[in-house]
Image 1 (cartoon, rainbow, N blue to C red):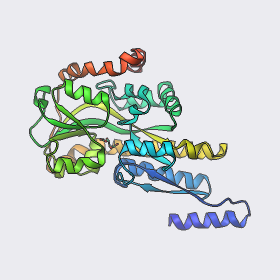
Image 2 (cartoon, helix red, strand yellow; image 1 turned 60 degrees about the vertical axis):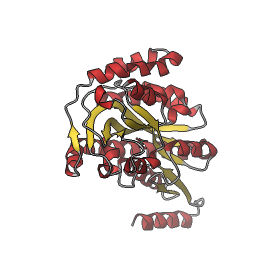
Image 3 (cartoon, protein in one colour; image 1 turned 120 degrees about the vertical axis):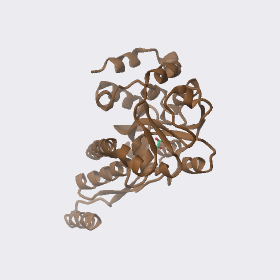
Image 4 (cartoon, protein in one colour; image 1 turned 180 degrees about the vertical axis):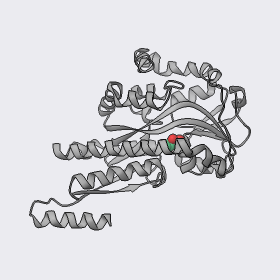
Length: 322
Ligand code: EAX
């Protein structure tokens, strides 16, 4: 139906003699089309189509079809991809200032994280992204991350001891988990399910959104709601595409990114409310009552990865944000 309408809208514009050829973008992300990212990617495409009267259209490249998040970010820089919804996992490799958002136990809750990202600090970081052959359009969301594994119920940092845990390709996360006693193994997301299935790693950590979108219950028995780090996501565009747009088109892309973030956050809210029941229904043991203080204490050394380079200013501003 949507495609029909797009076709009609395009035909109408053509008939009016004002059309340029229809242009199509690809929006890449690492999860399923039904996931919070898939919903966000589709909202981007639908909004862009609507605002442009069908002049712009697009399709998703979901499930890491075009590579892991690091590969997709590189794709934006060389112009082989147009728009990507990605976690900040590998982004610090390109824009190290962004590591501040990956620090463990920094954000108190969703309101805190969303408030910071939608305000001055979020804009400053989007600007930094923009200085690195990328266009940062909007902050969106993955969610608070929790530890899952196939070995045992984790309730204290001691339970993490020696656990082979896949992390994102993120120096802050790797340091935090080695401080916590685990054996962090960085790996791109598309390899993760098989690595869990084959026992290459014992566990991983991701928000409820990703655990359920990826059906990790098929390969993991235990989940502990450690909420050890907030995982932001961001809507990025290729500067090779974006810099060639008219001001009006840039406005459409921006509005599409904002709509994408809103749609994704709404789905995160839904899954946060219903997700624990969903994990249990699918056979996972979910430990909800975790004393986070000893985890936070042990993981604090990882802050130095950011603060040694950039000082404590940004960390203090984020903590002070009400
Ligand atoms: O962005 O790599 C990860 O664990 C991410 O959370 C996932 O790709 C979604």
